[in-house]
Image (cartoon, rainbow, N blue to C red; front, side, top):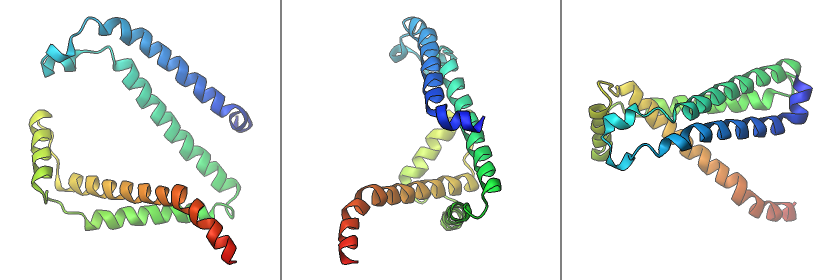
Length: 170
């Protein structure tokens, strides 16, 4: 299975995606003409179910990909533990940074815009509330995303510009 996926995995993933998109479009496009979303109330829009297949397919693919990532990651760690030390250290650093951002985050909205967004969410979500712990996770995830985006920028844009200079100095 591993050899098949390492050889043909991208093709299989692409074909599965194409098939799911075609199925979704075959379901959603004919039914979309029956609705005028700009003239509908929110309750009516929430009752429309022509997009359910696409949402369910996206969720299923996300779960399958996450499970595959974890299983193949564990397989590689078990088959080559010495070669996996850098990856394990990377995961530990990411978890430590996430914990650090979580402990630094406030459990109450510290800006009027954030408080307004929380109130809008809570008033429109039928009794769902954002707790202090949820707010801390949201804040830490945003900070972690910004950090990762910054690191990706450095890795993809800055490093190719700086590496010739570093190599010349050596």
